[in-house]
Length: 586
Ligand code: CA
Image (cartoon, rainbow, N blue to C red; front, top):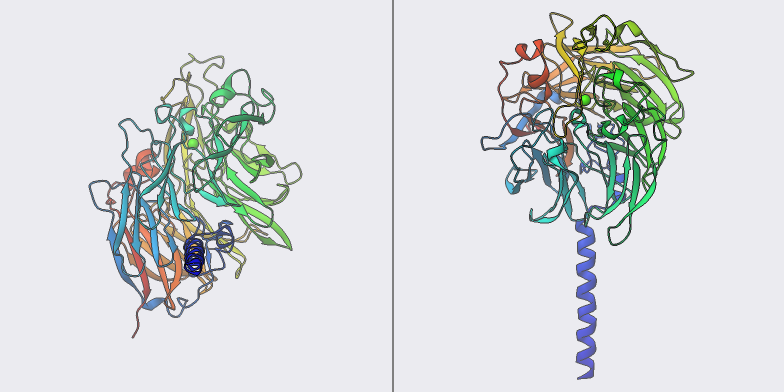
C-alpha cells in the first residue's frame, strides 16, 4: 500500500516534469529570439533577427540555382477585405504565422499552405488608420503569437489553437490611435509603439509581459510627458518626465506633439538597447512649434529593462515636411565597432554608434534633397536651407490662410518609407528600396481637435523623373557610394532580403518578386505574384530545403496620398495572398 502510494507520487512528479519540459520545448525563448538571425530553420522576428539585417545564412538558392526557383503553394487571405498587405511572415516549427489587412492573422502549415487556424479581429466603425488598413506582422514568444490591431489593441493568441490568451487596449482609437507594426520581443519583454502621428497623438514605447499582457513600463517620446512603471497589481507609478518640459516645445504644443512610433523597433543583444524611430511632430505646420521638438523625427535608444532613454539622435529637428524618423535602425559591425544604420524619410542615410548614438557618417541616398544641404558630422546637425521651409501662414503680407508654398524633395512619402532595407555582412552593402519624388507643400492654420487630422498643411506629391520613381540601391555605408541600382517605374513599397547565396530579393507594385546578384545588381529571377508586392520576403530551411516567401497585395499609403503619383499607379490591382517558393528538383 505504502509502496503504491509512493509510486503514484513519483509518477505524478514525472508527469508534471514531463509536461513542464514539453511546454518549454514547444515555446519560443529569449535565447532563440537572440539567435534568430543565425538559425535558418525559423524566422522569429520582424527583420529576420531583432537587429533587422534581413540577411539569411542560406545559400542553396544562389546566383546559379535561382533559375530553378518555383512556387510551391499560395494561399489567399480571402474575403472582400483586400487593400495593402505589408506583412512579414514568421516561421516556427514548420508553421507560418502571417497577418493580413483589416487586423487578421493566419497560422499555416509552412510546407503545404494548409490553413491551421485564423483570427479576424472585430473592428469597430470609425477606426482611423492614416495610411491604409495594413498590418506588418506578429511577434512570437512562449506559446503565444501577438499582433496589433487597427483599433489600437494588442491580441495574443495560442500559437497552436488560435484561441485568444489575452487582449489589451493600447489607447483610444477615437483619438486617432491604431497599431500596424510588428511587435518586438527583447529580453523577454513585448515592446510596442503607437500609430496616429497625423492625429496629434502622444508617441511612446511600451513594455508588457508577452505571456500575460501586463504592463511593465511606458516611455513617452515627447518632452514633457511623464513616464511610468507598473507595480504587480498594474498600478502606474511615476517614472520621470521625458526630457524637460518646454525645452524644445513652446507653450502647450507638446501635449499633442505626435512622434508616433509606428514602425516598431529593433534590438541589439550586444548593446542591450532597443531602437525605436519616432514620427513627425504635430501638426505639420512647423511655425506653431518653434524649437527642435524632441524626441520627434529621431532614433531613440531605450534600456529594455527600465524604459529609460539612453541616447537619441534627431534626424529632422523642427520637421516641417512630415519626415517621420521611424525607419528601422539596423545594427551591424563596421570597422570593428557596433553601429546602426538608418535610411531616413528625409533623404539622408545615417550611421551612428549603436552604444552612444554618436554620428559616424551621413550622406544623401536619393538624387534630390532640398530641405538641407548636408549633415555636419561634427555636430550631427543638418545644414538647413531656410528658403526651402514651407512658409508661415501668419507671416506679414499674406491673408493668414496659406503660407508660402515650396517645392520640397523628397516628398513626404520619403526617400524611403515603411519598406525595410537589408544588410549583407558578405558584401558589406545595404540594399535600400528608395523613391525619387518631390512635393508642393504649404502651411495652413490649424487647431487640435480630438480624432481629426492635425496637419495644417496642403501638398501634392510629384515624380521627379519620367522613367522611374522607385530604385533598389546597393549602398556602401562607409563611402555613401551607390554601387548599383535597379530602377522601377512605380514607387517601391516592399521590403528587401539578402542571402548568403549572394542574392537580393525584393517586390514591386507591378507584382513581381525579383532577385538580383548582390554584387552586380543583375536581375537573375522574377515571378509575377498577381498583385503588387509591398511586403518584405523571408527565407528558411525545412527538410533540408530552402524556402522563400512573400506576401502579395497592392495598397499602402501611395494610392491614398500619392497625388500625381497615385494617378500613375491606379491601374494596379488589389489582392491578398502569401506565396512560397523553393528549388525545383529535376
Ligand atoms: Ca507622418
